[in-house]
Length: 570
Ligand code: TEU
Image: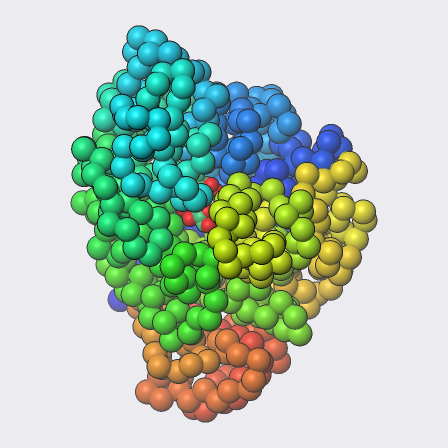
């Protein structure tokens, strides 16, 4: 079959062909000089996004919030957090994006609200219909109803003196979990979603959506590695009922992009969310490739093997190939900067940033660019706990200092600087102006000290920059169906340094070869059909046609493709 026929056979959708750019509004761009990013600041950068070539923006929460978790604690779903602007600012941003054919996906946070949400305030007063909007349980004030733990440390329960009951919070105590067993809660959520869709958005990223259904009698969890209780709220008993109801009531338009953030799912679970007879989500954010280097918990993350990394990603590539669709990401606002975690943020920062971008744009699935990744932004240094803002990190430090083997912040600083979420939340680095051109005020969080050399302005002026390479990657993926719809096959699964694979779509073929090490390595293309392949993109000088055996330099990336046989069909 020609590649056109095979592409048509693969249920083409705009969001499969798209590249999505994730914006963390607090840290993207500040227009009013208060040191906090805002909607008008984002609007000023839409031409930057257009030049980059992205097709959609995932905007992290901008709703009214006390900011206990930087907006993932919502106190009013239908108003904008004042520091970010107002609905007029939001409508102008939507218009500016749509004028440039850039779609807008909003963050849907409905596993929990803020404690300050009217619903919670009325629930704690046992006010009529709101009495059962959250998960309340009797119990003596010093004995939580079960042993579940919060993702942010400590018990997942807090005793409320006003209602004289415990309430569940799988995250911070300021983020009480909604009671999805209550049809009134579901109706309120669906009404809110319909309202945002009526504003003209193009989809939702659904925060921890596979946590909304809890085991009915909230049984104790099996203590062990990680958060206690997850077996009773990851992919809970009614999750698919709720998501199918949401789809039928709100999300029947399949041109909407719906991304479920689903910690703890495997490929088979994912098929129930995204498969042809699943719940109708476009894709999920799975976590296996960003937690495989954890031991007891994220803070002991460290050594990882490329062989295992390849095994996990390949499993997801082949697992969803025939039924469903992958998201492809290596960092976001919760994860460390990918060049620091999976590349080399020192001598080979540029090369490894390009290498990782090559991976995310040539695997099968929708690539997600996290703000700043396109210029190779890195993890930061946090000399003192006072430099930190993230509730998860601050809770971890507090808990750690209670342990006898932890004397001071210095004893946990390495862990914080390796996987702490503030690494991803330092301001976007626009220029070498003060505060990286992010704000004319005092930024809410320190800038990374490398902003004078790592910034958009400098990258724009350097044709060999990570930024220009990302633009080329996005353009290449936009032009070549084989990179979007082609079948994935892993090569050299046991090679400790080389990540190599082919993509095939009818008569179109691709070969991707990546060296994940700082030492040169030899690639032997045993059994791979090299005829007709030509170099399409590389992060170093490379021959136009591949030979059976060739050497890759430190963090060298090459993509070979058969020349296009047909006019682009998109
Ligand atoms: O994240 C859910 C989640 O699993 C994260 O807490 C992540 O695993 C952890 O932070 C890694 O250290 C979502 C949002 O992306 C996150 O920003 C929110 O804090 C969280 O839900 C609660 O809404």
